[in-house]
Length: 117
Image (cartoon, rainbow, N blue to C red; front, side, top):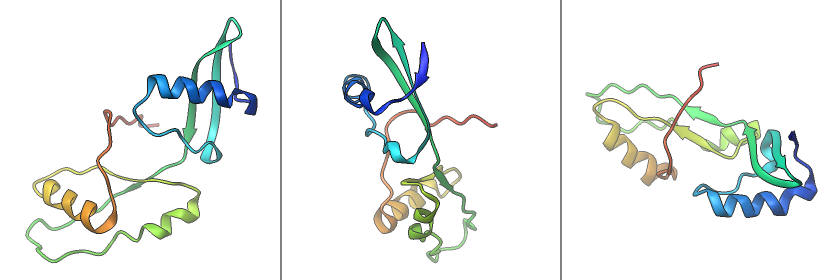
């Protein structure tokens, strides 16, 4: 049975998360959808949908000057706790270093996927 998350489920979903996930436990206050799958009075799965943000930047690969585009404090007013960047192209490795060193971006675990709604 799929049902809405209830506060009384918190201990069970934290335990499930610790046993099955490498990513940090989500901030449930930022989640729009919170559901659990219950089978024989036991929670066997939970899922959330939360808002997140993605940075999209185009830079001339011949340009050597730093571009100060990432003002991450602007993102927090939209009730999100993450800013994602997906890097491609010839400058992806050097730009990744800049994002990490100057703006606090970190590597993530897992396989990035998207569902184009």
